[in-house]
Image (cartoon, rainbow, N blue to C red):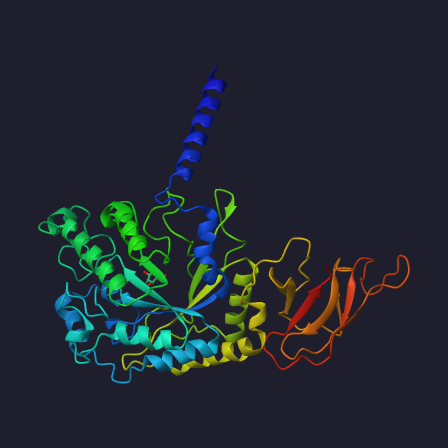
Length: 458
Ligand code: GLC
């Protein structure tokens, strides 16, 4: 009896879960969604840009809350914000040269400062010494380079007087009990209107916006969730104003199958293609060059070009995108470390981007050789073997006998000769009867990560 009750309860729970998964806000079909996301899924590589007043203190974009700085004291960064060397054409060219196809700019970060000329606040770039709508110039510059446009907009706002003080706010109290007292007079419904108005401005004043990055929700005690943003109404407005737009998943609408278009693993590599309810979903990992999103002068944990390339290739090899962040300086430039990283990636991408654009996870029938990452282009049906640790001359493709027609290095299009074992049961150096042996040059080609392009047998 007891067991039956438990089983019934489990069944009910499963049904409830299943129906929760089917909850939807829009009527778009999976095929329509795939089409809407097609350019993004193919482009694979984008630039994130975190830029705001925090570029002045230059010690993390969360500096205001980390150091619990009051607005009166934070104001000095506003008064001194003057990025006189800002030239977004230069940024756009750097992004393009690195192989990035889309870019996402922080129009407003958690500090509340707007890089655009919003009519709903004075806390904006046009009121600082630079006196410009920096978003406007940015959009024009990136579009001119053929780069798709993305806006990051922080749901959080430490500057707005109606945004209630929560656990991550600079004015957070030491004692739990003091939250209520501190929040007297703050009215989230007014903030919700502000947020909605600003998102509307961003989506109506700058032409076509390809991506919207809303960041972020932190449900639970003294946190903020979808109720605080009125997320459903917000996303409805977004999709109405810009029907083709792609929206990230941080509105706290996980109960809805279409509460966000892609998942956003941040600062870590996924073990495999992320799934929601057992189904593979579009995903993009966002990552920094070093340990901060905003410009951080004294941070030294910068990733090497090799690490960054592996990150990009590995993301694509698991069906995902990489959004790689630059934090420009207070003068409006990318610093030397960022430029080096971008240059290094660009050098590789110039010759090897064919293994990235339009590519995805390889079909299971192609085994991943040791120390390699595979990507696959379903259109051209080509397979890309990325050699992370350059092998000796004889390189085995396990189980590939009869599966490939031609092999070449991607960077220079030079043939790579291959052979199958001769006769029955012939084995040498670990070569099994279904393996192929590729004959590579002893000297590693002069590319950071050499790629073998395999033209597959039909
Ligand atoms: C986190 C951080 C934020 C950064 C974002 C990028 O949400 O709060 O500083 O903008 O990640 O994904």
